[in-house]
Length: 518
Image 1 (cartoon, helix red, strand yellow):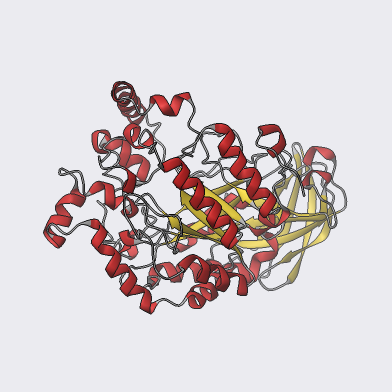
Image 2 (cartoon, helix red, strand yellow):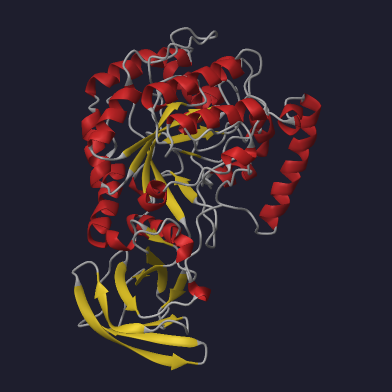
């Protein structure tokens, strides 16, 4: 036994396991009752939605999974849609529709698709903000009895995913549960200040412990915040590490300290709402608005989770870019092909993330009525899978190189990664003598010229991963380093990216890979 204690110092001994660092690509699944109405107002990203209409920022997001709260606010588009489509039917009635749709669900089909996509792990939303659980929990919800599925979705998917030799993780909304809150929230500050108190903290802890005991998830992915004080929260994580030694936790475990407790007070909410609205308006006018959200840093975490955005440079902390294929995680029945992320750009953003020490957690939002994954989502998973089939060597198991990005002399962007040294426990000890240069686009000529550090002594050849062909290259000295030129038979064709393995003779410490240990 490792003997973890509920302290920051003790939990800091838990290193990010190598499997997570090697995996690079995971599948997120947002699926629940919200997939029945499958509606949210059309918005250009969550951050812009918040900035553009702050007074209703918690109900104007493009997230269909926030429907349960939005329909409680009469002036929201979701409330209007609900009245027109469903009349006075309560949200809780969607449970029957969702469970009827489960008759069409085959966990094995999903798992095979995820394997085909090249993903190495899967994270299922087991309980989102509406409080509805996708497993037959033995922990009773005191506000909504039987607020869970009869069928064990979590267990079935865990078994199917593991049969495909993928890791399985669970998401749990610890900070928000609208089944415990009768009052809707309108603003972002109200949202973060609405963590239930009373009997909810014990309920949430019991459910998370049940998930750990029953399913042994490789990833424990909490959302928003955690409803207890610091020590009980750290105890949950310590017990999780004891149960799953190679497990990882994300960074959304802000405990209920003084700051979050103050957020529950209406005067504090009004004061902060006014300040935040003015700040967002000022940032927008100055062109400083962001595309996504970066969570605050909690007392303990294994990896960071920027949402619908990414980090611009290589970080020492492991991170995971978290996003959907459209502006919503949950399925939106109004989404069309033009609302989905371009396939090529999706692959390129994935490569950029990996080059900077990140993983990609790409969401699928299945339909509620028949449990199917929409074709545009399936096509994007297959596109990533096709690229990884040919170029996975440059992604899986790699480590960030100190020079994470560059470009050809003709201006085509390049991202770099390097192979980790065999048998070494830490990426900081060095890497095998291969660096991967991933050219993100077609070229007009037959020669690719890449600037490299002066300390690199390259071999005479460069291997293209897609067809395993080796091309001759030369290295010229420049005033700032070295110029590697690779001569091809023909220009690089239009494709998401082209990966080359470049051998080198020497690597000095100033270009050693970045450590992934905190």
